Amino acid sequence: MKRYFDRFILVQLLQSFFTTWALMKVAHMEPGNVFTAVFFLSVFVLYGAIKRRVNTRDICTVKKTKTVAVALSVMFAFFYMVVDYVYYIKTLTNLMFQLIILTVVSVGLITLFYYLILLLFSFVAGDVEFARFWYREKTECFYDRYAGLVSFLICIVCWLPYFLYLFPGVMTPDSIVQFEQVLGLREYSNHHPIAHTLLIKFFYNIGTIFTTNRTIAISVYTLFQMCFMAGVVSYFIKMLAAYRIRILVRVIVTLFYALVPYHAVYSVTIWKDILFAGAVLLFGCSLLRLSKKIAVSDCLIFGLSGIMVCLFRSNGWYGFVLCVPFLFFHFRKKAKAMFPVLLTILATAIVVKYPIMNRAGVVQPDFIESLSIPTQQIAHVICNDRELTEEQLDLLEKVIEVEHVKELYVPTISDNMKELVRAGNQDYLVQHKGDFLKLWIELGCKYPWDYLEAYVNQTYGFFYPDSFYLVAEAEGVSGSRLGVSHTPLIRGPLVVKVKEISIKLGSMVPIYSLLWSMGVVFWTLLFCIGCVLVRNEKAKLIYYLPSLALYLTVMIATPVATEFRYVYFMIFSLPFYLLAVVLQEPDTVKEKLPEESS
Image (cartoon, rainbow, N blue to C red; front, side, top):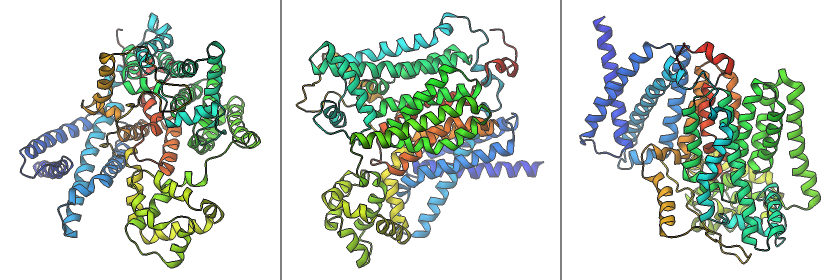
């Protein structure tokens, strides 16, 4: 027994040592810093406490729990180190020392994440008090009966000051391009989804019935967008009430949408990404409800939100197509009710995207727009002065002026490289797709590290949790001669300062600032999927599939490394990810929980 105990302590000491070393590197601390001792003692005590807790809790299948925890910890450590590793070894020139440091940090981070994930799993999958926290038995109070309406009004009231200050809404250059199409000053293009542009036009035309002032007329669309997003929140909260989720939880979720300032600013920002985010949450909520019980209203919401997902962002269509086989399989026992809805979504999207747009002469995005990642990878190879064959160089020179690549290449955004192609001979690229595919593969096989570096530089903001991106700081209307301008209905130094502080708090306040990290939200999505596996509820994986599929499409084709709005659908659905883990059938909640008095 003593030998076992000594071995246990020795292992825990080694784990604490490696974790301390990793934390020291992550925090960019010198080895002699007194906080290394603080880290070591804290981690040693924490690991012991977690082991004791896990050993005394029933967390479903222990082997499965540990397997999922290992898988997640390895992924999280990789996501962190693939960006941060350069800081750990920047003072080292010896390859052996570099490998030693990277190995130690990897082991330390994996160990840390493993124990923390196990700790969280012990609550999610095996703690009775944790399960009891989410539910209430009585559902007869005013807030339960009018949960949706109350949450809708709270959001509108909290977002209204932003609407009044940013009136008629935030319009960036992308918004201006769409508004020019609305006014007939530019031909219709699906570069910004035509369905969204036509929706703007619909509400703008309603505004013109009552006024000739374009600023006021466009605000009708902004007001609609606010109401739509608040309505999505309302539907979500109403669903939580139907599942007997505790009032406190529903209030916290409502305040997340009402008070976190980027939701308010985005609700009045005229971008396709905003309604798309609302559609994704609607789709997830209706998918969950229909998985339990078929209702006509939920079928209609499922169908409408599915069509919006397909038409309001280009990657939405591809993400939905990835989900289709799994959705048909999931609803196979409800085929009579659900297959027609799924087929309607598919048929509507296909008809709109192809015959209708072709007949209407809608211009589609050019070919290079979808090649951000390959373009950046090839440019990275050129910038690193790698050897190219005469045939490869000749092929590139038929499309671009290769000598300009080094001066224009920006590792985190592909716009310069795409413009270089557009200024060259893009038609040749389109006509010789096979040759350029071969070139891309050849260079990737010869210089894989360059390709990996270019890919990480182009995508790190979506999986690395320590990259801050100032969100929702834009305001006003981009310069144009369209007769629309920023016209605040409330103003003054106090209003400006409050708005400025509310946005900047995301970069200043610990824990709260996690809500501003795209990488953290992605990690949360993966953790929730792990929770579902640990709880032996694999059927719930379908609730996370749409977001995961959409995330993959972003990672395949993102033109910018740290653009918050590209994954705003994930941030907007964050409470859904967390609560879907614990949601149970309303009539089974009482059976699964111990008796409680209230």
